[in-house]
Image (cartoon, rainbow, N blue to C red; front, side, top):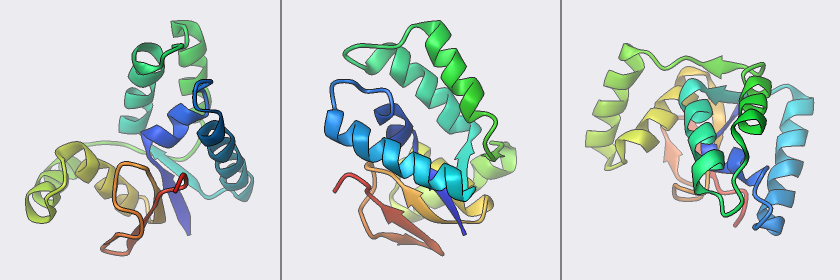
Length: 137
């Protein structure tokens, strides 16, 4: 089964100010990359670029961030389209998730992931057949 990575896990790969989370994120990313079961979405790539260039205490420059996005784009990606957006709106309303979290969940489900790695949602939560795992807890 596939494992979907939320934006925050990818950001920690580059966050020099969070060494423990950086180490855990790198080990997790490497393990799933080697297993060939990692899954991302176009939303994750967009959010990643903004986060690492604007939200880190020591942000990446645009060229380094663009290079990282290009590398991530070589991995399996779920494309965010209008059908996925409408599904996320319904999930957001029905399950009291933010729209952006619901869109991540819908992308993971659409991509047939069984695990969603994220620190932004409740660890152990089941959303349909998708299990949320906080890799930092």
